Length: 249
Image 1 (spheres, helix red, strand yellow):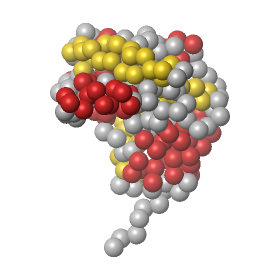
Image 2 (tube, helix red, strand yellow):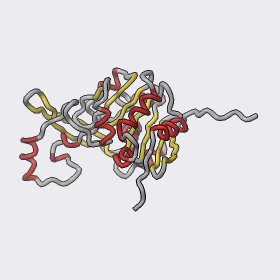
Image 3 (tube, helix red, strand yellow):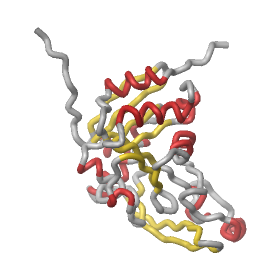
Image 4 (cartoon, helix red, strand yellow):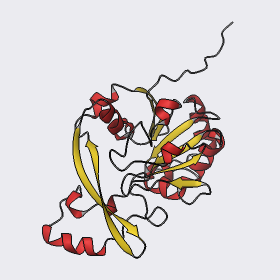
């Protein structure tokens, strides 16, 4: 049996430098649990490196989606109709502090434990932010929750970077926002449960479905690929990142 691959924080920092992540950068991070488990210090070590490199003058943010709050009629997996009533009766409902993240797994749930992290109130497609946040990013709108007009506005305003550790570029949160901007994809209606005191409330909203369009939408992005051990790492942006080249005599 081969020994596991251990990744040090210094190795992550070196990768961030090659990807032009620096003080003041706005970075949206997505990472697999598999990647975090191979880092010495796991998810918090990854966060420490990112926060140290970006600084509070920049912004670190990530999806903290909670599909468990969706109405059973919207579940991606088939749920028998006779179970819908039971699920609706016992669903806890979205709460920005108490609801765990299904998207981004270990990294997102660890991020939510850190000081000065703010989570948006969307019942399914929430994001968490740390650093130099803007009001329009935090005030995520219910309809079309992935949009460059609010939660992902730093990609248009600040040349933000989407950084993916061991996640393919087709999983980027940018793609539904690009589809919405270009009037592509299919609009569908979803609803989810929100915790309101001792009771629950149902929230209905519109989303953009991009199933099968990922490659086309990635054509509107700038992409750079590298790796750390066996793990692929992608940098995706709407604008080309100007990298500092070594000066040759």
